[in-house]
Image (cartoon, rainbow, N blue to C red; front, side, top):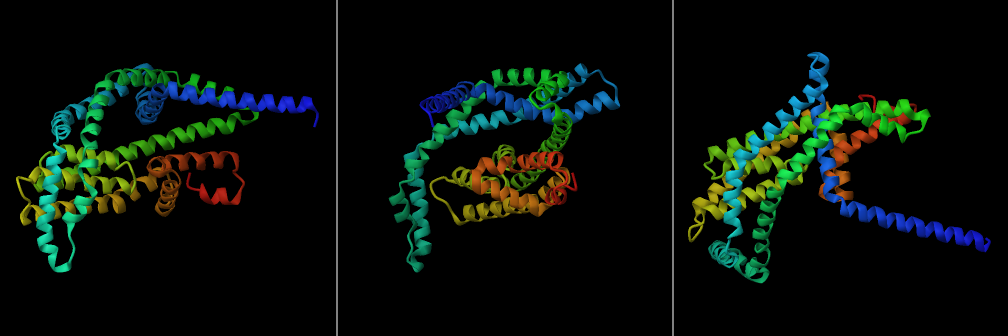
Length: 360
């Protein structure tokens, strides 16, 4: 290898490193804009079906169809936001003013009661809590709630940006398609267009299915919490429906949140057996909702929407979760659907791909 070749290789390596650093810097600097674009893409996918229905079936001009659909979405969002905001603000304000030292004493007192019941088995909860010092991790809860309230204050600007981007992407959809095709080789234009069309259709159906599943989960959670007389039943059910987006882990977070807030609301100096029984009944009700959601509504909805077997979706979700954590579990099904569509368009003759995508 000549010195000239070494110099070229060194310059190429330096150029790649500089380009990578610039990309990372741009992503970091424009992270808020990227977030708006991603949210707009989700809104566009959800709005695609109603917009197509208005334009193709009812012959509504596209600009009016897009405007009506986005106004409907905005109305639904604001309605849910206005219903939940008072409860969220009240609960967040209470939590942000928690005296963590006092709560630690409450837990220790409760543990002392449990020690009386556990003395016969030689185990002590209070000793464990004194060792762990719960106040160390409880002090982070008010900070988290204050951060959430800060996010709520920034939502106005974000909502305007998302609506603006979503409107023009939906209105000038063909311009977006032409831009994507300009980046693809001419020989692959047809597979690219087929892929874009299939991905948009399947992801639109997936997001609408996710909305349907979350709505059903919210109604079931609210019914159980309301029947059992839980304070802030609407807020807890709404948060449970949001956590439900995370497969398998979300329901566990919901259970922990409901139990913790219920125990803290009921504490007035000491916990009694009645409080424990009520919390146990509440936990059984929440688990019942999760069983119905995990084994009935979720498999039925998503297996039909993304046209995959329930076992296939379970294995994919588990695999993505092991590789990428919670974020992987959330994006597992849509990512897998996109990969299946791409494989069907570009490798249609492969036997394994034919078996995997025959329902698409």
